[in-house]
Length: 409
Image 1: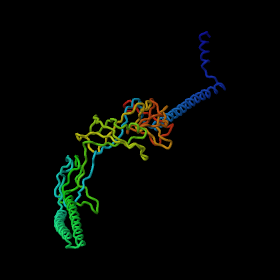
Image 2: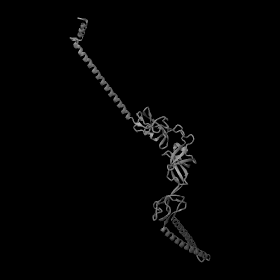
Image 3: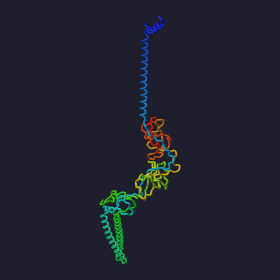
């Protein structure tokens, strides 16, 4: 056998599968390896699925917590360093304001003015028809003539008896009676004349005149209405007259600012119907005492109204200049809707580190929509606007982006 044939024979023998125990063990080992690989892949898939579900649960929980956080609008305090005036509301009243009543009984004959009419002092407003007073006056004048006639007769008789007494033609007693009768007649004349004057005065009240110059603000009668002077009942108002060429403005100043009420000081007044325009008034007097109920000082400001631009009863804002050293240079202003009124006192909610923190504050003056804050907050603090009543310290919050910079105006 050649060497080539021998090598081919050896090669064929090497490819013959072994027999016996070794061949039987080879197949199970491969199966086990495949099963282990499959198990490992399965475990990896299960672990990856569990991890993905866990991560999804965490993301969902974080998203839910974030959604549950309230979204709040915030504002930062505005520095109030150069406050030069105090603005307080006031009410205007006419310098003279009076109702006009009738002083005699009768019926309204005619009226000459109506509401809104500007009248002068002494101008005729209305006329009253008083037939009863007229007849009483006629009777009184007749009684006066009768009394005067009796007085003249008594005077002639007294003089005659006094002459006869000189010749002892009559007694002293009869003369004294004649003189005494003259005195009684004179008293009757005086009484009757006084009654005539009284009725003439009542008759003069038939015409109603304006007691001062002003504007008729009310008319409560009409032609033919019964006029009762109110002897037994309250009189009925016929007209209401107000002097509007000069007005009084009454203002209640808080006790803390009572030092601004300096008599003869000039103040500015503004009205909503005249935006951008200021009227100048003068402080003329004050009550010089603090009201125990409101803790305010009542003052009066007089203002000229010759052009009748300001109506009586108007709501005005009075600007008082602050005295030197009276203003607080460290104060700030905040909107009034940031305040929380609770049993712990006045508080505001400040956003710090993504959470709300309730901070006590002390306010100064109230400007209506804005308040002065003297302590409790800093200029960089973010104050929550319109805080919820359930808000407590530590509540997570999210700040909404401000539209105008977020600073109090």
